[in-house]
Image 1 (cartoon, rainbow, N blue to C red):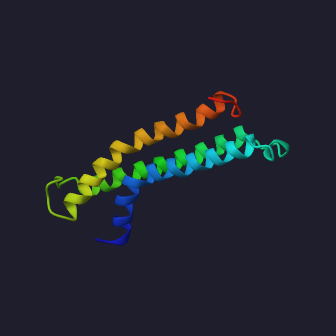
Image 2 (cartoon, one colour):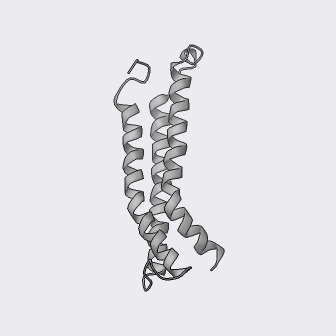
Length: 123
């Protein structure tokens, strides 16, 4: 199996989750920088940074979904019970196609929660 096929199958499974994780940590850092005493004088563009981060994270998640579809289509004649590598490719393609929409929705909800309200208040 080539390195590019192996990368595609694992990116299809883990790419959307990794994208959300990085976006969530980035959003937390922006919110902390905005709300801390030192950050109040910096006038950080929280909405702009959140929107940009959300768009980038969603684009990476969509690319991960495309990678999952390519992986699945590359092993469409196999079943998940087949021996590796075809069985693994088919299984990971299905898993990637299942988790990508979930993480895409989480990315949008995570970003829109920041955009909908004030960042600096007690929950």
